[in-house]
Amino acid sequence: MSSFDNELRVITWNVTGLMSSASYLSDILTEGDIDVCGLSEHWLTPNNLFFMDSISSDFDYFGKCDNSNRSKGGVAIMWNKRLSHRVVPIDVDDDRIVGIQMQISSTEHMFIFQVYLPCVNHS
Image 1 (cartoon, rainbow, N blue to C red):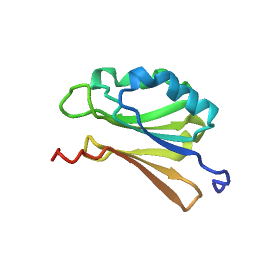
Image 2 (cartoon, rainbow, N blue to C red):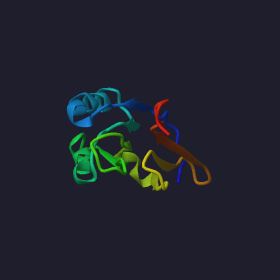
Image 3 (tube, rainbow, N blue to C red):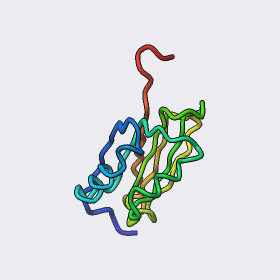
Image 4 (cartoon, helix red, strand yellow):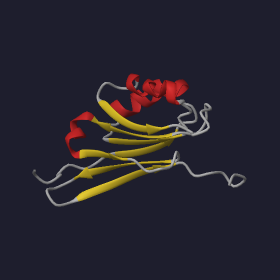
């Protein structure tokens, strides 16, 4: 595998409800030529996490929902499908953390995590 020579465009967004912000996210991913996007507070439940498929056909994703099964919290990472052969999702046993391992050369990997931290009045 050749070295990862291009710059990597990464964004994070506390989206505060993905369903109401999906068109904005789609535009940002396309117009910003984004490679990796971390999302927190997507507010999707396990039954509607598939909604991530509708954001952009050019992106794959790995996401988790709040364990309480309510429409709050949730984290996800999206990556452009042209990088999919370099990306392995990392399953962390926590509903507030998702990660990916990206191979950037034959011997080097980059790790990207999206974390949703609790507010000050939450344990």
